[in-house]
Length: 170
Image (cartoon, rainbow, N blue to C red; front, side, top):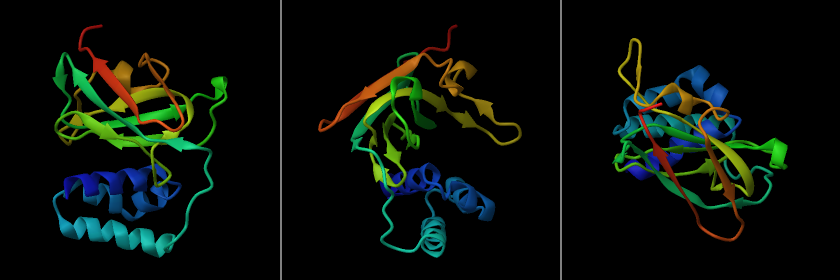
């Protein structure tokens, strides 16, 4: 159930529907109640209402991307990884998003399709805990694709694996 939930939320947030879903509070509600079947059904209902069934986005070529995130050698137990197409290297299109599981692993989804655009990407990460205000689990430099220092080239017709080794030191 956890992997299906993670993939579904990644699909919601990586599509053009994210603003609409956030407006109705569906994605945020499901994130807070990730083990809830009701939360999953709420997001599925919202998607069906907004888009309908059978819509596939027109995307450039996509390839499978999986990976893992560690902080100071230990798996990062939660967070979001975002693959931002590097237009300066000719990669254009929507970003890919992956939610980090307890073991530090992630799978990228782009506009509802498993994988990331083939080409060059800059990578950013967000990982927070707590509510008011949330506390970042990673140094802020990783929150921006321009300062994270992480890049990846996604190649066609192979399973791309990306290892992101974060450090808490500057």
